[in-house]
Amino acid sequence: MEYKVVGDNLQIVEITLEAGEKVYAEAGAMVYMSGNVKMQAKVKGGILKGLKRKLAGETLFLTEFSTSSGSGIVAFAGNAPGTIQPVEISSAERREFIAQKDAFLCAEDGVDLDITFTKKLGAAIFGGEGFILEKFSGEGLVFLHACGDFIAKELGVGETLRVDTGCIVGFDASVKYDIEFVGVKSALFGGEGIFVATLTGPGRVLLQSMTLHNLAAALRPFLSTGMSGADREIGFKIGGFKIDI
Image (cartoon, rainbow, N blue to C red; front, side, top):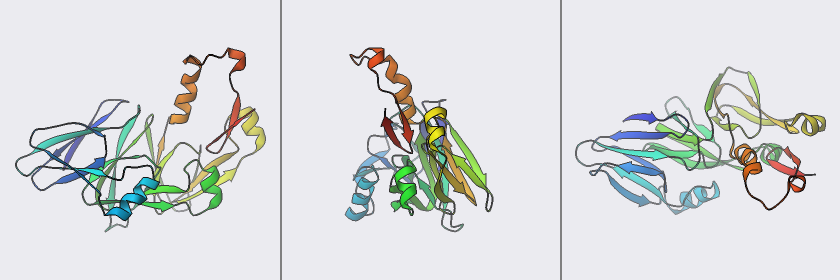
């Protein structure tokens, strides 16, 4: 399967399908496709997996695209300003990938989309990712979408990266994910939050330079709210939560 990512920070991935090849995507992600590409909504993996996907913020039905004759193209884009990153999944190399909710855009037919749960309660509550994450296994490429630009890191055995809790897009299943207490003073005066996420290798880590929360916060002063400047809310973040003061 061939593909190309088009654009800078409002990207589209265009995939070329040959006869017998299939891709599937979240509902509503398709932008355009050639006339010989067939589109069919399916509860991929059955009702149980469909309901599990709903818990992760995805749709019950996924849309499958294929062509029975010749080559065809189909293109997908996310629902917010951002970029697209292909991630290779390999059962032979035991390379499964864990991603934040709503990161999934589309994938080859050989990639299995499921959910997994955050193993530690503290990481679930304060880590910004929630209890439920998306898990990709099998064989093939999955395309992830997130705000801003992607930053890819490859961590060695025991190597640790400390990250703002909202900036994690995903990581290999071999990477240990936890949270670390920084301090109230940092939250009140540094604007960095009381907790940071810690990712310990080995494995791949994908980060995003912008989050939807930060984008919304940057736009808020320019939106008409009916309030004067003195009436606008102020506050700070604890993990993925907003505390008003």
